[in-house]
Image 1 (spheres, rainbow, N blue to C red):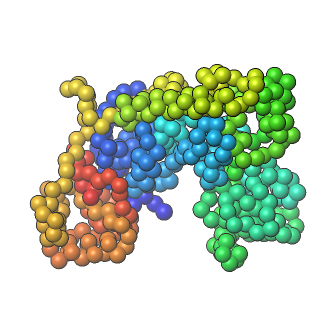
Image 2: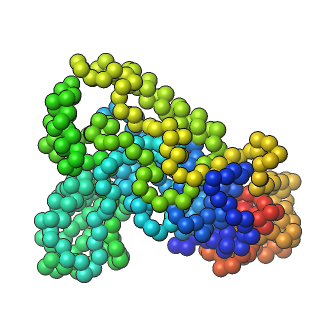
Image 3: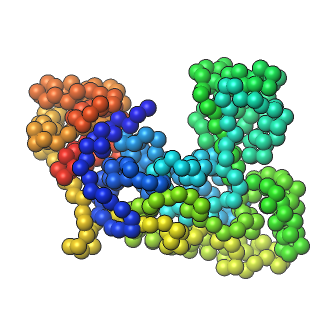
Length: 430
């Protein structure tokens, strides 16, 4: 689906914003600013916000203005927790990291937690299926298992696959629904959506991608390092032995730091710039994560056994934000100016002067009459239809649209977390 408000961004007579630099961007304007200021970026742009909730909201709002923004989720688990992250989280992280390794510029939204997390060295490349592909079924089964997928009799959840004759049912780790791949001999004959409830196939899929179901896996490098640790770090010999044998098990990700070299999300990717929103809060959040990790290590180190590293001598899971940022040009974007020299994108609030429908409609009409493109972003089709009808009854013509074809005022059935009114941009998004 095309971004419904993309023409508003294209019409913005924007300045050329570049990193390194600094510009004040109010929180409600972040999505529009990202979409407009970096539409012609030469490489990937990563937007970093302090919290996971802010990242979710920003990615949702960004989808109004650009096609397919990417959200890099953080692991839900704590360092040393001995619990594996959700399969969907690991699959979606692999999908985003794979996109960052590509040449097609993308905008990625990340929280400080996901941005500073130590990445796995395991490959993030997917298995792909499309009609006409040649497939060796035995090799494909081995490849899916190597990517962390579990073979079952009937798929139900992400990270599972089933094989019956020449039919492969697969629930990709990053996907919202499973798919069925049918073979004719060694050739893919069809790729279609699959219903978990009915086990019936549906709409054709042009290309099916299945990203790794585990972000950290016991590949040859990990197995070799685990064999070395059996001698050099016998305090965890049971774990090293399982990894040296290529086993996967719950919580294995907690041992990643001992088995791979330190790295950063930005290593070996073509990121043209990082936009750091609310730099002060982001730095504070980074410090909090590192402190929480240190506290956990202090509490758990005595339980690791004789010869285990003391607290503070463990491989770090979260890196300091400043260290990660050294690999990219950074555009700092606080929400408030710190002095008169700061460049500022200004917005104002929406005050209808009353809570009744008539007052709101008149306030919307006043914005429209002032020359702004006014868009009401409503939750669902019924709410959008009702808003357009009420405005029409008040003599205000805001047509109902799924996607606006050009810069214009309209009512759409896709909500926004943070609206704004900006005379500088010529837009009121409510």
